[in-house]
Image (cartoon, rainbow, N blue to C red; front, side):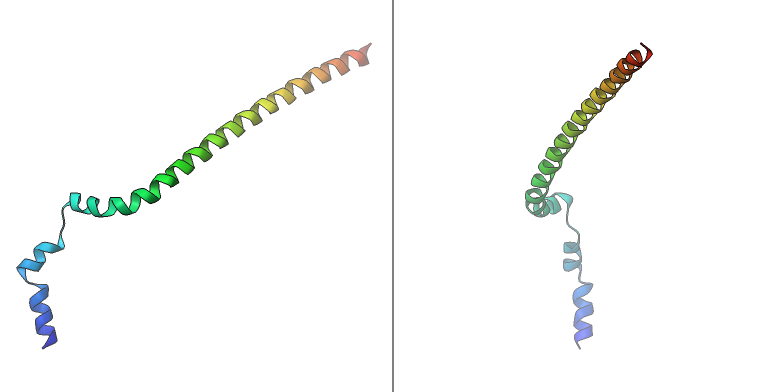
Length: 83
């Protein structure tokens, strides 16, 4: 009895047309759920990228200064040793 009713309901033409929704209806349902989560996540990723970029730039400046300092020290040491 239950299986017969189930099959009648499952294959009913009126219900079968409701199984597929247009994309704009899906967006109207899912955007209120995902935007409040994705917006702060995106802002956080951008901030971390900005911090990481500034740290890498400051590190490269420090490394270039230390390389130039070591080169100038080695040149001054070699000059003083040769005298």
